[in-house]
Image (cartoon, rainbow, N blue to C red; front, side, top):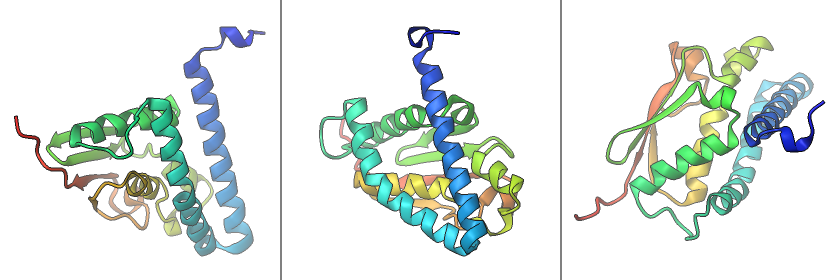
Length: 179
């Protein structure tokens, strides 16, 4: 058996991230079974909205963002990428892609069929009525960070389930910096 000193930070991050995902899925499944999918969706979103400000506060602290607000689009791209890498297990983050194709646009794209929530909801038979908590969490992060944004498409149901792919854009309203 390995000692704790022999376990890498990446292995610890992956273990903790997968533990969180397992708990989240088990909570959702049991809540839906006990109270129905509508209640599970509503409570899931309420928990996400409550958690996001604390999660962003802690993430900013860990990443060393020492000022209260995101000050530029470039900082938004860097912070979002680092926050997702920090929080998501590598097995998940390797299937989720963020790009900044133009100023004030961050594009997301899940590998086809590879969103963990999509796969989990399909596995437990709740995909038809599942309301996307993954993108809602990102929206709540952005709200907690105090940035102005729009999301397209605005997810309610699982986008991958309804369209066959999960891709879209966050549009921000940062001023271009004069050079």
